[in-house]
Image 1 (cartoon, one colour):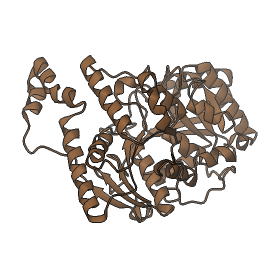
Image 2 (image 1 turned 180 degrees about the vertical axis):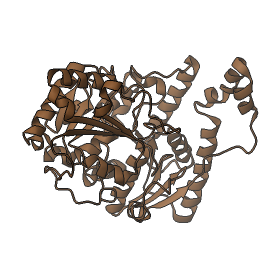
Image 3 (image 1 turned 90 degrees about the horizontal axis):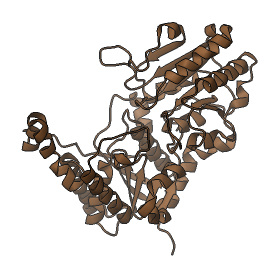
Image 4 (image 1 turned 45 degrees about the vertical axis):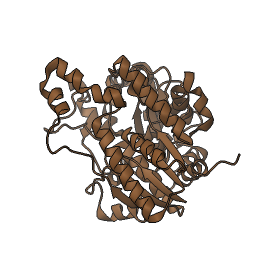
Length: 440
């Protein structure tokens, strides 16, 4: 199958960039011909050997994001026009439903795709990835240019942003809301198929008047670890040896923590654990790494910075490359996952969950009782505690600590069926079924 994959983010530090890269690799490994149109990759992201392994056989075309040589009148109004200028500068975005830069990049992608089609003919499918929504802006233009081209649109998160559930909040004016929802409905009408990482997100976004689009929608999970980024052989459902103090329970979290993903309840849970079991104070350590955990000046994010009484038990480090962070994670006893606090329904399936499940450690998930993460762990794979319940977090930490002391952590590993659900071949096969024309 010849696939044109259109993704603003690709092989970069963003979660979506890495998820899309892993999918491209898995599809290429199954013999598909991929051409990726993207705003750019980060050449220093991994070693040259890993980069070759990840991108081998994948044709990557860089369509640079437009940068004006001279500030436009809209830039001037936004930066120097005061209150009124900022509102005038928002006019193009209100008209189109997206920015002038989005529009310019989409037109450049359309031209790049048209040139490839003129050279090699139409692909079997066009697959575009959100986040960034500019990917769909471009794919919509390509679809208009080539109406016979089959389009599969992927939504990793809600768009427009006002469709995020509480506690997430984005300030969007009423006119912009109407216009952006019109754009969304236009995309859903144009696309032959639509993909979401989970059923709950699909139902959340395709409700009300958009319920009619569920017939063309499909839930496909994020892809887990791929060999190109996890070169060490991992014996699933068996613990890797850990070369460190075997008496301590080490939990590690990798990735960006948005402001809604609060760690204060986790820190309070640690305090309650130490109050009830003083011996645990010398035996439990939690470590974070990822984008924005360490600021440009070398200091840690103040939201994560541990209070004085927990400094011996909390460590913060900065970003690590995709292959090195896997090694870092697997040196821990438990993978830690933190979801947004206050979610009544956990509609999100974090991409790190796929990496965790296909790893070799149990998971501690701070997530809602009803949600994608809870559904995944229901058959085993670790423990869950409500994000805003320090007492429940303390109980989960104590159970993990107790299992560590008795050598029973292996009992909490994800079962084989759960691991298989996120395997590259499994996910790639599901995309193949969506990409293929459906028999009437």
